[in-house]
Length: 521
Image 1 (cartoon, rainbow, N blue to C red):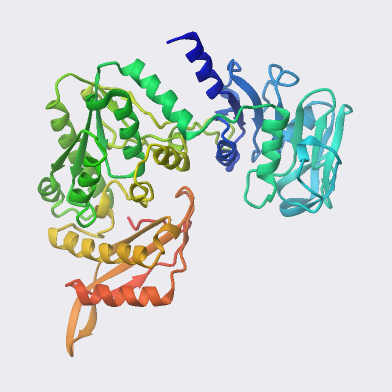
Image 2 (tube, rainbow, N blue to C red; image 1 turned 90 degrees about the vertical axis):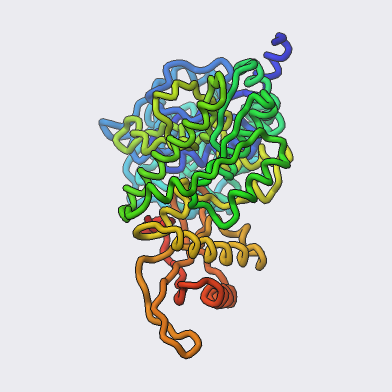
């Protein structure tokens, strides 16, 4: 690789480092920076021992801690302050004030929620394009009482005098509000001012640049090695496969397993879509094997374990048919690998493993390649779009790995799968036909283990009840139910009951997450 190419990649990957102090919206800071085509990474404040050479700015996140507490995070900023552009957000700003000569004290009232800027310093580059009255979002119980001597006040709200400040002799800024949240109306503009106009960060983190650099990287890393990837039909595995295919062509072997718990006709439809994308894909219909293993199992966790185990067995069998495979590709994305800071101040424990193929055991002896591990979900879609992947694939709702297996409550039979597939198909197609699909983050149907009395054609029926579920969300961590039109629900209910044998009752789930979950099992 030439020196010029090295320099080109370095420019593409100018880094803004986000030091995480445990705020629940730290990831949102990163997403906002990426929206400005600025590359950033989140690191726990206590895990950063050196500053990367390509780092061109640092942001200190919020935190559930008070800077006045004995056990509060206390990062060493000696390699950052005065040397790199620095922005402290909420706790980050209070830490700067508290440790650089100012005073932080408990606020008389908790400063939480919407506020409006009552003072903005004129001709201040940090607030260029932001006027007095602009709405911001506060979330803190401490407040900066006195600024350090070498600080200049640049913004206030009616209740928070020292809402924003800058150090007069360096490019260091502090703000007590959260520019990353939706409620701070000019938050994106403020971040852009800091990043581009003050820090001079190059806005080169684009889908096209990511594809170019990633393809070149994997051409060099993988060479002529063979790679196997478990496709799911979802966005992440599809984009990962397309990227790797650009790098290594037919040396990428994709396996799409039908576990018998997919949506109606999904196995055939997805295979057809992949065929037209030029991917080297093998479809494996193992539905009978999965259903046999699941026979009689009603426990949700038990079903998940069976589905995961059988998937590994099938995938391993197929992988062994490919001679000299050295790598396993996975569609892991950035939220799956971020090492967060817990409320106790230390790194959070990993909640779960995120493997597209169910978490393969060590006996497979394959090295891992993860082309998407630095991307957020919305960036994955942008990258996919830049490579010409069909919008129908990119816009697909998330679908759980165990498929309909966790949407059938109780034991699983072929007849129950057929029934739920038909219900789900009517619901999803209805959302598409009525222009509602793209406004929903995830939708699906659940089959309940109860029968209810009904009347059809003057005859008494005693058949199954199904639940329709549609939620809006950004990442699945929280979700709210979608207020679908009554006319749509009425039409869908009638169509399901009239066309799906065995169902005589349809209900709509209006629970939010939390306290409920998106799925029922």
